[in-house]
Length: 154
Image (cartoon, rainbow, N blue to C red):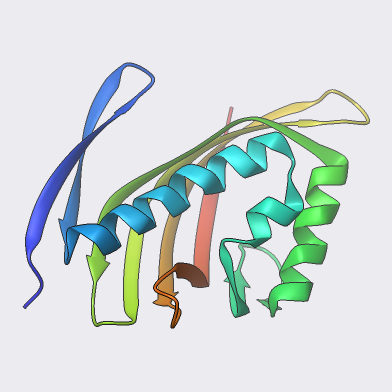
């Protein structure tokens, strides 16, 4: 049975407890993935963002087709980064659970504010996610399956 621990992280001056289960080293590696996920989307850095993904990754977005494989996900993200700026992309995991030596899942929420580059129109999203991750032979973790949905805020 994986160990359970709680980490407190600071986000914009607020503290938030995350439920964690499993070896601290693995949990912290996945925590870094979520930190980099938001930072790289905010920076519009498609290649750095894609370094978080497994080659056989699958993205399950709302209101759209399933996106299968690293190259297909990269094309979607590249298109989003060409059309949108993400001044806020704050990933807030609520749980990180290591389920075996090579698998884990995490769920949580994400605050996203994006601006259309062509028009300046801004949108605020309240996002929920459930993500499976896999550990590679070199010990690093990658996003393997990512399912999410959102509510557009008024």
